[in-house]
Image 1 (tube, helix red, strand yellow):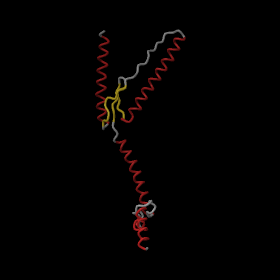
Image 2 (cartoon, rainbow, N blue to C red; image 1 turned 90 degrees about the horizontal axis):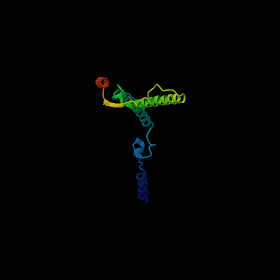
Image 3 (cartoon, rainbow, N blue to C red; image 1 turned 30 degrees about the vertical axis):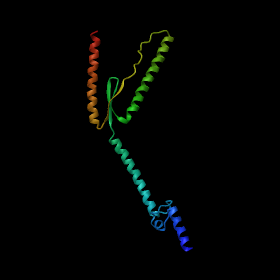
Image 4 (cartoon, rainbow, N blue to C red; image 1 turned 60 degrees about the horizontal axis):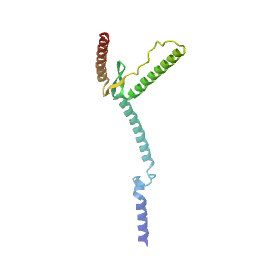
Length: 164
């Protein structure tokens, strides 16, 4: 009978994963409420350290951010890679505003039966020329190269227009 009670008690501790040794040391597999207070404090300290580490890594990520060279119409710019999408949206929004202003002026001119002196704004060219450049110096060098290429292209177009 005693052996049977001992066997039942042992099987209960095995089933629930609680042992008297684990409860004393805080290492038992249980509900997690068995750890001593000092162990909980050390876990909280580790959590605060890890949150501080995550802020450090986010600062390091901005310091190690990559750069891109973008072309907007006839200019080239160096921007952070994370800001390319926002810049594209801003350029498109500016175009839409200019187009709305043109349409309003055109409607007003046709209503007054006058000739409109403005030309319709053209959609701006937005190209990402280089991306994921590690240093801003590399990006600036590529940007200068693209500015020179754009100037040569404008010069050729001007000469071709004058030859017509």
